[in-house]
Image (cartoon, rainbow, N blue to C red):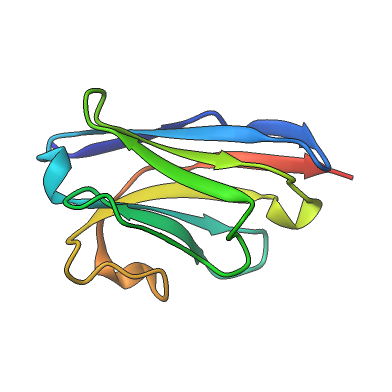
Length: 125
């Protein structure tokens, strides 16, 4: 059974930082792209970042580039999302997802095959 379990969400003040973790099981970690998407209240889910575990390449949405950093630890089958300089506009449920690196993209969530249940991040003003 494939499982993706997010952790690390919570409440943080404007300008603060959080690190999300996504532990992956049930798939060969090195063969997959692991992505972070988020969904703010009343908005559609949007791509944040993903890492291709086959070659280590990372991709970011333009609005998160420079503030967020994705990384992968193959020994722990875990992907991290370090989020800095958070603003209330970053408040959302953050989901991690696994997909085929060949078709992985941040433009749509349809390319991702497996999903976690999400972690809530709330940034207070």
